[in-house]
Structure formats: C-alpha cells, structure tokens
Image (cartoon, rainbow, N blue to C red; front, side):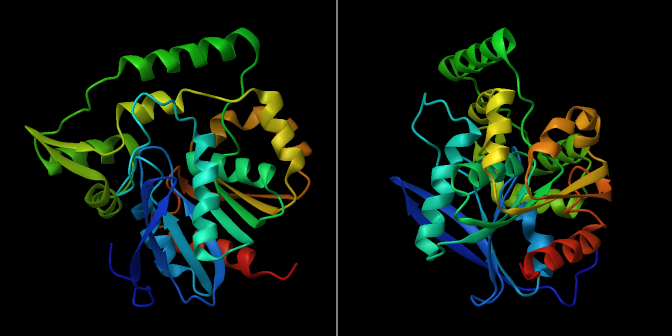
Amino acid sequence: MSPDPQARSAEELSFRVHDRSLAGVAWGDASGVPTIALHGWMDNAASFCRLGSLLHGIRLCALDLSGHGRSQLRPALRSSHPFEHVSDVLAVADRLGWERFSIIGHSMGANIALYLSGVVPERVHRCVLLDSFGEAGLEGRKLVERCVDAMRATLVGASPTVYETRRMMTMTRMITSKLNSAAVEAICERGAIELQGGYAWTSGPADEAAIAFTLAESVMQELLRRSSAATLLLVAQQGHLRHRWDRMDDRIQIHPNLTVKWVPGTHGLHLGEECHEVAAIIRDFLVAND
C-alpha cells in the first residue's frame, strides 16, 4: 500500500475520564467538522489511520475505547457491555468542548454510535455507520441465556492468547479479519503488549465476555426511534452485515432519518483499497448543509 501524498498527519490525544486514562488519535484542523470515530471489536484508534488522513475539512478524533489500544481497562470483574462506552464518549466530547458532534462508528463502534444517537439525540449532529446497524437483538429466554453466559465468563476470567512473536500476532489477525498487512500492523502496533513468552492484545478475554452481552430487540428499536441525527449506513458488499440484512427491515423503517449505501469491500471497508471511495462518501455526508 503506497503512501497517500494528500495524507494528513496524526496527533496523539490523552484524556482523564472517570478515573481512567483514555487515549486517542486526531487528524485535521481544529476548525474542521467535529467528529468522533469509534472502532470495532478488538481494534483500536489506529483502525482509522487511513480514513482520518483522507477526511479533509473534518476534525476527526478516533478513540481507543476502554481496554483497547492505549486506554486503560475498567475495574476488574466489572461487566462491560458496549453501552457503557457511551458515558466515556460523552466525557471526551466535553473535554474537547464539543457540545454537538458527528460520529463515525465501525462494527461495535457503530453500535455505540447508535446508542449515543438514541440516548442523547440533541448532541449528535450526523452519524456514519460502517457495516453494522446495531447488535443482534434477542428476546426472552435467548436474551437471558446470552447474558448469563457472558456474566459467568466475566467472573471466571481467562488468560489472554499469547503469540510468540509480533509477526505471528499480525499474521493471525490478517487471516481472521481479511485486512491487509499495513492495516493490521498499525492496529497491532497500538494494541499489542509484551508479556512473558510473547505478545498479547490489550483487549482480550474481558472484551470477548463483554461483547456477549446484548440488548433486547425492542430496546434497539426504541433507541432508533429516539434518534434524530441524519444517519448514513454503509454496507460492505462482502461484509458481515449482508448476512443479517434480511432481518434489518423493521429497523430501517423505524429510523427517522436514514440513508443506506452499499459499497465495495469487506467488513473493514475503511481500511482496504476502497477506503478512498468510502472517505469521499463520508466527507460529502459530514460537510453537507442541513
């Protein structure tokens, strides 16, 4: 992957939020459209390195969500549904002085963006969702069983997967994510820790247990009804969401201000060769006049 001559340089950010340190990366002039980027499961702020460098006119702040990248974990043995990231994002926005801002979310980050749009619609200007339109909502017994399993996993704990070398870590992630080597190396550089015997991801078993928690479908739909932000959903033609697309009809009808676009690429559409096309679509949406 050759460097982009128009790419913007990145700057490191650090915030003290709820007695924890949260880190991030920012691109663009402070006068640009204020936008917070939220990464997916087991990723970190580096997953926006290509997109951030291309979004001219946008002040993009990509966060390392709690327990990912260079941000601290929440206290041990505390369950951490992705919903809990909402308060962290709002606190960061407050530190930045952003009363109203836009959001770009990928995968789990897109789900968090939907929570934000529904919980505090007055603070979200525009919302971009990358290959996710909320978690798979369950009801009744299935929902209870899923949450019980997640809580048990949190309480029991588990050891992280340790890779002998950083190269092994990168290659394994490339296989599972279908991302190119440059993208995975950037994420690994920010999200790897050295342990006895090798390397592990800063986000590990605790994050895997947390993602098992889910909201009821009725709750997801109510959050969508409450959202007032203009929302752009980009669906990757070879991504994850396409496998659940036939179950999205009710959600699409419920959201009051939704635009859907199908684009080339896999689940990591903002990190592949199609990122220039994706960046152009996102930029046009974020800078559009209401």
